[in-house]
Amino acid sequence: MSAQPITTDDLVAAAPARPKLGVVPPTPGATVSTMGFVGIILGLIAVGMAGVMIVTTNVGAQSRELAGLRREATELSYTSAALESHIQRMSSANALALRASELGMVPNPYPAFINLADGSVTGYPKAATQDEMPFLRGIATKPLPKPVVPTTRPAQPADTGADSDLVAAGATGGQP
Image (cartoon, rainbow, N blue to C red; front, side, top):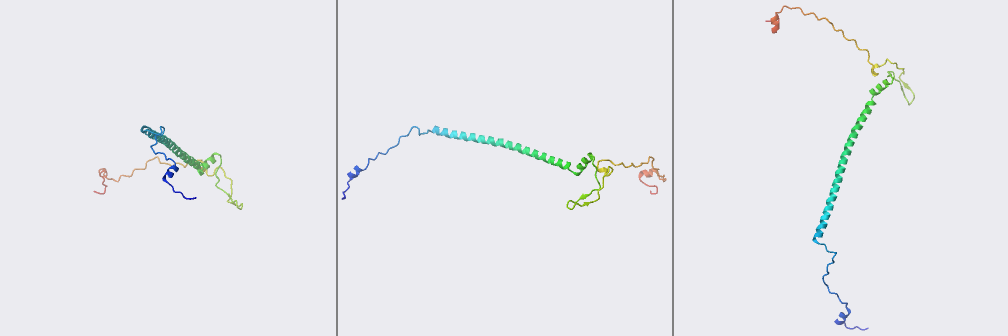
């Protein structure tokens, strides 16, 4: 194998033919006119505005619903406070004593206590009767007697002989 000289004719014959470069003709579906572009932009703006309106309307509706729920929660908290106050009034010692007296129970001024740990009794138990502590049962005690008011007037002081004109003027009988 021997080396042969390469000539330019050999290079031209061995190289493939190159195509000529030129401007590609536009395809009919790939072009967008100025009016089409403006239409697309206006469509996007309209869709965006509609989306903003929908979101704003939903937020407003949720805000009104939230305000209603807060108002309802406030009313429920007031109702709860009123009910708790009612329960406290009904479970007070006075209310319990009044309801017990309505049932015919009487207070016992002689209580006795049982110590549950060792079973011992503290105090001396005694049965209660109906006439003890009537003020706790809502029974009025005997009214106090009314004071006697005298019906006669007290005697007038004796006249000391002072001049009535002087007395009216503010002077006494012994002073000028």
